Length: 362
Image 1 (cartoon, helix red, strand yellow):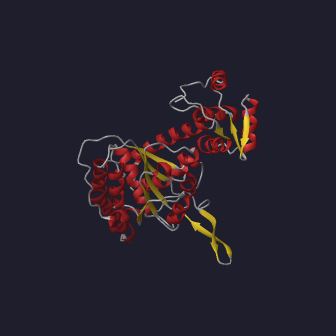
Image 2 (tube, helix red, strand yellow):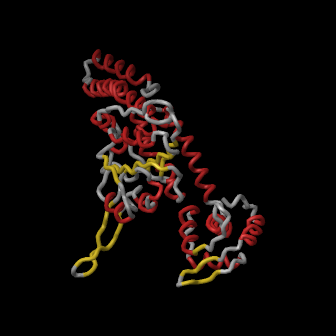
Image 3 (cartoon, rainbow, N blue to C red):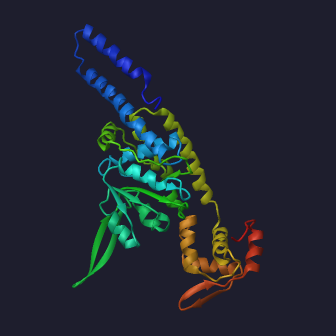
């Protein structure tokens, strides 16, 4: 693992110790600092390098991605007291690319890991309450709102009610913590995506062997982290817990890599926010109205509302969506108090062409 230590640091401290001794001055502080650097070098040699080899061996990730995953694992040991923000680590890729193996390797490194298998949003909420590091497999159908709220202490307290003999009781679950999950598809909600660090996996020939890693040595590295950070924008904040870990081992190469990833994530977020409401509604209708087999289907306004919120970060009200659909020429009917947009592929094709958004409808 190259370039982790600033080359002049140890040499400079040794020179200071020599000068101080010649002058009859105390070198206690410098001796302690030197011992810390030597210990850190040993940890890098004995712990970090094997950990990186283990991570790259269990999936098709490259060295910088392996560092990203490792620094995330180290950052979990700053929880629950030293961080107010903790991004989601989302491992995304097709079957057979080592997603589960990578998570099992991480299980040996992170702080207080707990495997979750939520069957519903309430069960996910209850499982996340008080969990420091949650590991979730096959998370394509997980409640993205809860995962997004878990990212920050400011949004992590979830209020809900349960039935009791005397009526309803209000309870609060604190779901703040680290989340490591794997999915086959990206998040629908741009807000959750911007709170996540995405690790794409690919097929990598090998035995996908899980390596024993001493969690105590990972914890020792976490103890070296003394930097703090102030919040700025959402994307940059998501990388800061990992960046302060990288700073503690002076990994300037990876810090440069993380900055390039941040810029890409910011551009991706901005691209998802560049649609006018009418355009976003049209895209949502396009996705829902015509199936892969070409069958036209009516679309519930409630479904459009969900998609607009989670795909475009547009929290439109049902009446607003209904008005946009009617203004575009679609007929909106109500059955059983559920308003829906009547299927009309000919009108849909015409409007999409006008918006220059027409693509294959599957």
